[in-house]
Image 1 (cartoon, helix red, strand yellow):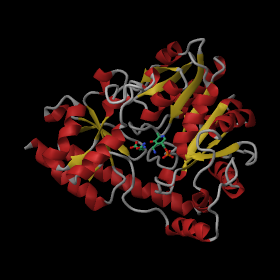
Image 2: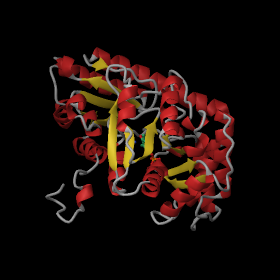
Image 3: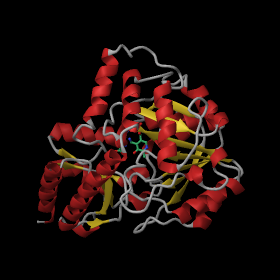
Image 4: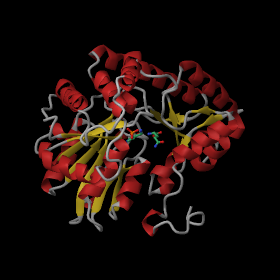
Length: 388
Ligand code: PMP
Ligand code: GLN
């Protein structure tokens, strides 16, 4: 990338094209089954799609208000109360963003001075590293160790320095599928309180927990006033291209994020904001069916990957399953993923790109299960050919 873009600022030099763009382009170019980038291959609920069409027809096509339309901010506050018992003021404690991606970027840019530290877990979602770098901050990572993705509490404490401003947490976690337990979250919360850190939590997979439960970090003692909770409609309503996200938290922190956000996109997705407000108001049955559907797909893909000879690591949530490719005589996940389309017409994502400790990530590969069952089955049939 550096060669291709010599003018690129030094703090962005380590970043090339995202792995998702690279692998989705490879899937299209080779007509492969794309189990790489996490997006569903079916649309979300018809009533939500209809609400978007109706909003366009009703003329909701100009700039929405900076913080997001009131209907959506109220729906987000209602959702937090209904699912987690969290009370937030939709006027001052909710900000609508261009997906969770913008919320993460705006939060890090708003909270970090150049030279500050951000603590997060590896493997980490790729935009975290890029946004920390954009802010001129430094990432300090604590590894979620295979096979169970536990972390060492002492290592976490040691990662916190006097320059640490933010702890960035993602649960359910991409790419591992780890759902942080209450005990782990309590440990993290205590460290945030002891070291006076702001927690930024990325909860985009909040409704895709198959074992355990989603516990918002903000609900733990001492955390309400120091946590920014980020989510989006992408996964919950299977409309990843709409890019309607949000961030909730105490007014001062949300104001800080809004100050930055207004100069990134200013606003976005006016008609889709109306539709996501409708989605958040759907009855519980919708959310349970979404969860049951994805769980079944996860189970189906998990069985298939195991039958194809991979060691499948535990995943308790999200769209994703990670495998260890070594039982197939492979060791380099990046080379494996780049050759997979040609070898068998399937695309996956190499987890090594989510690690600073490249050794640890090298043999790990992520497959997305958010696809129709016949697509999963066909991918598995193709992958079974690898062992022969
Ligand atoms: N965080 C995580 C962990 C993700 O997997 C994704 C992928 N969608 C995002 C954030 C980005 O969400 P959005 O599409 O709402 O920007
Ligand atoms: N969140 C999606 C994934 O992890 C990718 C979104 C993107 O391409 N930035 O696969």
